[in-house]
Image (cartoon, rainbow, N blue to C red):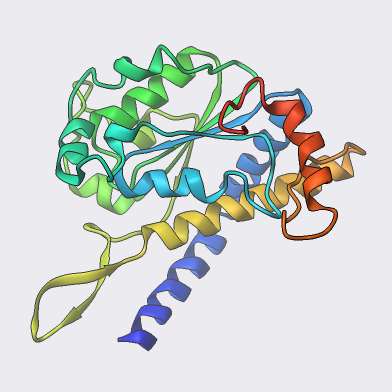
Amino acid sequence: MISEYFQHIHKLLVAVEKEEKETLLIAAKKVSECIQRAGIIQLFGCGHSHLLAEEVFYRAGGLVPIKPILIESLMLHEGAVRSSQLEKETGYARTFLEKEDIRKEDVVFVISNSGRNPVPIDVALWAKQCGAYVIGITSLQYSKALPSLHPSGKHLWECVDLAINNYSVKGDAVLTHPHVSVPFAPTSTIIGAAILHAIFAEAIVMIAEHGKETPIFVSGNLQEGQEHNQKLIEMYRDRIQLLR
Protein backbone atom coordinates (compact mmCIF):
# COMPACT_ATOMS: atom_id res chain seq x y z
CA MET A 1 0.00 0.00 0.00
CA ILE A 2 2.93 2.36 0.50
CA SER A 3 3.77 2.47 -3.20
CA GLU A 4 0.11 2.76 -4.15
CA TYR A 5 -0.36 5.73 -1.85
CA PHE A 6 2.70 7.52 -3.21
CA GLN A 7 1.45 6.87 -6.73
CA HIS A 8 -1.90 8.47 -5.90
CA ILE A 9 -0.22 11.51 -4.36
CA HIS A 10 2.07 11.89 -7.37
CA LYS A 11 -0.90 11.61 -9.74
CA LEU A 12 -2.81 14.30 -7.85
CA LEU A 13 0.18 16.64 -7.70
CA VAL A 14 0.66 16.29 -11.45
CA ALA A 15 -3.06 16.96 -12.03
CA VAL A 16 -2.98 20.10 -9.88
CA GLU A 17 0.17 21.40 -11.55
CA LYS A 18 -1.24 20.78 -15.02
CA GLU A 19 -4.88 21.76 -14.59
CA GLU A 20 -4.63 24.46 -11.92
CA LYS A 21 -1.41 26.19 -12.92
CA GLU A 22 -3.07 29.32 -14.31
CA THR A 23 -5.24 29.54 -11.21
CA LEU A 24 -2.19 29.15 -8.96
CA LEU A 25 -0.43 31.94 -10.85
CA ILE A 26 -3.41 34.23 -10.32
CA ALA A 27 -3.36 33.38 -6.61
CA ALA A 28 0.38 34.09 -6.43
CA LYS A 29 -0.11 37.46 -8.12
CA LYS A 30 -2.82 38.39 -5.61
CA VAL A 31 -0.58 37.34 -2.71
CA SER A 32 2.30 39.35 -4.17
CA GLU A 33 0.15 42.45 -4.61
CA CYS A 34 -1.28 42.04 -1.12
CA ILE A 35 2.12 42.01 0.54
CA GLN A 36 3.38 44.91 -1.57
CA ARG A 37 0.47 47.04 -0.38
CA ALA A 38 1.16 46.10 3.28
CA GLY A 39 -1.67 43.60 3.57
CA ILE A 40 -1.48 40.19 5.19
CA ILE A 41 -2.45 36.67 4.14
CA GLN A 42 -5.13 35.13 6.35
CA LEU A 43 -6.10 31.46 6.30
CA PHE A 44 -9.06 29.60 7.77
CA GLY A 45 -10.20 26.01 7.90
CA CYS A 46 -12.18 23.73 10.19
CA GLY A 47 -11.14 20.31 11.45
CA HIS A 48 -8.15 18.96 9.56
CA SER A 49 -8.33 21.88 7.12
CA HIS A 50 -7.08 24.18 9.87
CA LEU A 51 -3.77 22.29 9.73
CA LEU A 52 -3.00 24.03 6.45
CA ALA A 53 -3.36 27.43 8.10
CA GLU A 54 -0.80 26.35 10.70
CA GLU A 55 1.42 24.68 8.10
CA VAL A 56 2.41 27.98 6.49
CA PHE A 57 2.50 30.10 9.66
CA TYR A 58 5.81 31.10 11.29
CA ARG A 59 7.59 28.78 8.90
CA ALA A 60 11.30 28.79 8.05
CA GLY A 61 11.54 29.66 4.37
CA GLY A 62 7.98 30.94 4.42
CA LEU A 63 6.33 34.33 4.31
CA VAL A 64 6.13 36.39 7.49
CA PRO A 65 2.76 38.16 6.96
CA ILE A 66 0.72 34.99 7.44
CA LYS A 67 -2.14 34.97 9.93
CA PRO A 68 -3.97 31.72 10.66
CA ILE A 69 -7.51 32.20 11.95
CA LEU A 70 -7.50 29.51 14.63
CA ILE A 71 -10.84 28.92 16.32
CA GLU A 72 -10.29 26.23 18.92
CA SER A 73 -13.87 25.01 18.98
CA LEU A 74 -13.56 24.26 15.25
CA MET A 75 -10.25 22.47 15.58
CA LEU A 76 -9.92 18.99 17.05
CA HIS A 77 -8.35 19.21 20.49
CA GLU A 78 -11.45 20.51 22.29
CA GLY A 79 -13.63 17.72 20.89
CA ALA A 80 -13.38 16.31 17.40
CA VAL A 81 -17.04 15.30 17.06
CA ARG A 82 -18.22 18.62 18.47
CA SER A 83 -16.02 20.57 16.05
CA SER A 84 -17.55 18.73 13.12
CA GLN A 85 -21.04 19.50 14.41
CA LEU A 86 -20.24 23.20 14.88
CA GLU A 87 -18.88 23.49 11.35
CA LYS A 88 -22.34 22.58 10.10
CA GLU A 89 -24.15 25.21 12.19
CA THR A 90 -25.58 28.12 10.26
CA GLY A 91 -24.59 31.42 11.86
CA TYR A 92 -21.81 30.00 14.04
CA ALA A 93 -19.15 31.86 12.08
CA ARG A 94 -20.50 35.19 13.31
CA THR A 95 -19.53 34.26 16.89
CA PHE A 96 -15.87 34.74 16.01
CA LEU A 97 -15.73 36.71 12.76
CA GLU A 98 -16.66 40.03 14.37
CA LYS A 99 -13.40 39.82 16.35
CA GLU A 100 -11.24 39.21 13.27
CA ASP A 101 -9.38 42.07 11.62
CA ILE A 102 -9.91 41.47 7.90
CA ARG A 103 -9.13 44.39 5.61
CA LYS A 104 -9.55 45.18 1.92
CA GLU A 105 -5.79 44.95 1.33
CA ASP A 106 -5.70 41.35 2.60
CA VAL A 107 -5.95 37.99 0.87
CA VAL A 108 -7.99 35.34 2.70
CA PHE A 109 -7.67 31.63 1.97
CA VAL A 110 -10.60 29.48 3.04
CA ILE A 111 -9.91 25.74 3.03
CA SER A 112 -12.67 23.15 2.98
CA ASN A 113 -12.32 19.83 1.20
CA SER A 114 -16.04 19.14 0.78
CA GLY A 115 -16.89 22.83 0.49
CA ARG A 116 -20.43 22.19 1.69
CA ASN A 117 -20.50 23.25 5.35
CA PRO A 118 -21.88 26.62 6.48
CA VAL A 119 -18.95 27.89 8.57
CA PRO A 120 -16.24 27.99 5.85
CA ILE A 121 -18.74 29.42 3.38
CA ASP A 122 -19.77 32.13 5.85
CA VAL A 123 -16.10 32.99 6.46
CA ALA A 124 -15.59 33.40 2.72
CA LEU A 125 -18.68 35.60 2.36
CA TRP A 126 -17.69 37.70 5.38
CA ALA A 127 -14.16 38.24 4.07
CA LYS A 128 -15.56 39.33 0.70
CA GLN A 129 -17.83 41.83 2.46
CA CYS A 130 -14.72 43.21 4.17
CA GLY A 131 -13.25 43.81 0.73
CA ALA A 132 -10.54 41.15 0.91
CA TYR A 133 -9.69 38.93 -2.03
CA VAL A 134 -10.89 35.44 -1.14
CA ILE A 135 -9.35 32.21 -2.41
CA GLY A 136 -10.90 28.81 -1.75
CA ILE A 137 -9.04 25.51 -1.71
CA THR A 138 -11.53 22.69 -2.13
CA SER A 139 -12.39 19.54 -4.05
CA LEU A 140 -14.78 20.21 -6.90
CA GLN A 141 -15.44 16.49 -7.33
CA TYR A 142 -16.41 16.21 -3.65
CA SER A 143 -18.49 19.40 -3.67
CA LYS A 144 -20.43 18.58 -6.80
CA ALA A 145 -21.29 15.12 -5.50
CA LEU A 146 -23.14 16.39 -2.41
CA PRO A 147 -25.66 19.17 -1.73
CA SER A 148 -24.54 22.25 0.17
CA LEU A 149 -25.58 22.58 3.81
CA HIS A 150 -25.45 26.38 3.58
CA PRO A 151 -28.81 28.21 3.48
CA SER A 152 -27.87 29.74 0.12
CA GLY A 153 -27.49 26.30 -1.41
CA LYS A 154 -24.03 27.28 -2.64
CA HIS A 155 -20.71 25.52 -2.11
CA LEU A 156 -17.43 27.20 -1.18
CA TRP A 157 -16.19 27.29 -4.77
CA GLU A 158 -19.22 29.39 -5.70
CA CYS A 159 -18.64 31.92 -2.92
CA VAL A 160 -14.99 32.91 -3.43
CA ASP A 161 -13.15 35.15 -5.88
CA LEU A 162 -10.87 32.32 -6.94
CA ALA A 163 -11.36 28.57 -6.44
CA ILE A 164 -8.47 26.09 -6.48
CA ASN A 165 -9.34 22.45 -7.02
CA ASN A 166 -7.25 20.04 -4.92
CA TYR A 167 -8.53 17.08 -6.95
CA SER A 168 -9.41 15.02 -3.88
CA VAL A 169 -11.95 12.29 -4.44
CA LYS A 170 -15.36 12.28 -2.77
CA GLY A 171 -14.69 11.28 0.83
CA ASP A 172 -10.94 12.07 0.48
CA ALA A 173 -9.79 8.43 0.85
CA VAL A 174 -8.03 6.95 -2.20
CA LEU A 175 -7.08 3.36 -1.32
CA THR A 176 -9.15 0.19 -1.17
CA HIS A 177 -8.40 -3.39 -0.19
CA PRO A 178 -10.49 -6.57 -0.33
CA HIS A 179 -10.17 -7.05 3.42
CA VAL A 180 -10.99 -3.44 4.34
CA SER A 181 -14.65 -2.47 4.30
CA VAL A 182 -14.26 1.24 3.49
CA PRO A 183 -11.80 3.39 1.50
CA PHE A 184 -8.78 4.73 3.41
CA ALA A 185 -5.72 7.04 3.13
CA PRO A 186 -6.71 10.72 2.66
CA THR A 187 -4.86 13.13 0.37
CA SER A 188 -6.27 16.62 0.89
CA THR A 189 -3.77 17.81 3.51
CA ILE A 190 -0.69 16.85 1.50
CA ILE A 191 -2.03 18.33 -1.72
CA GLY A 192 -3.30 21.44 0.05
CA ALA A 193 0.10 22.06 1.64
CA ALA A 194 1.81 21.72 -1.74
CA ILE A 195 -0.66 24.16 -3.28
CA LEU A 196 -0.02 26.81 -0.62
CA HIS A 197 3.76 26.48 -0.64
CA ALA A 198 3.80 26.64 -4.45
CA ILE A 199 1.67 29.80 -4.47
CA PHE A 200 3.83 31.49 -1.87
CA ALA A 201 7.06 30.49 -3.63
CA GLU A 202 5.81 32.08 -6.84
CA ALA A 203 4.64 35.18 -4.95
CA ILE A 204 8.05 35.58 -3.33
CA VAL A 205 9.72 35.67 -6.74
CA MET A 206 7.11 38.12 -8.05
CA ILE A 207 7.79 40.48 -5.17
CA ALA A 208 11.55 40.23 -5.65
CA GLU A 209 11.24 40.87 -9.38
CA HIS A 210 9.43 44.11 -8.53
CA GLY A 211 12.56 45.16 -6.67
CA LYS A 212 10.94 44.83 -3.26
CA GLU A 213 12.30 43.18 -0.14
CA THR A 214 10.43 39.95 0.58
CA PRO A 215 9.54 39.18 4.21
CA ILE A 216 10.74 35.59 4.61
CA PHE A 217 11.47 33.74 7.85
CA VAL A 218 14.90 32.17 8.30
CA SER A 219 15.23 29.09 10.48
CA GLY A 220 15.66 30.12 14.11
CA ASN A 221 18.20 27.33 14.43
CA LEU A 222 20.61 29.17 12.12
CA GLN A 223 23.04 31.64 13.67
CA GLU A 224 21.54 34.66 11.90
CA GLY A 225 17.94 33.49 12.21
CA GLN A 226 16.80 35.10 15.44
CA GLU A 227 17.96 38.63 14.61
CA HIS A 228 16.67 38.41 11.05
CA ASN A 229 13.26 37.16 12.14
CA GLN A 230 12.79 39.60 14.99
CA LYS A 231 13.07 42.59 12.66
CA LEU A 232 10.34 41.16 10.45
CA ILE A 233 8.13 40.21 13.37
CA GLU A 234 8.21 43.83 14.57
CA MET A 235 6.80 44.88 11.19
CA TYR A 236 3.73 42.66 11.46
CA ARG A 237 3.01 41.91 15.10
CA ASP A 238 0.36 44.65 15.38
CA ARG A 239 -1.80 42.80 12.86
CA ILE A 240 -0.70 39.25 13.67
CA GLN A 241 -0.98 38.83 17.40
CA LEU A 242 0.21 35.22 17.22
CA LEU A 243 3.67 36.61 16.42
CA ARG A 244 4.46 37.00 20.11
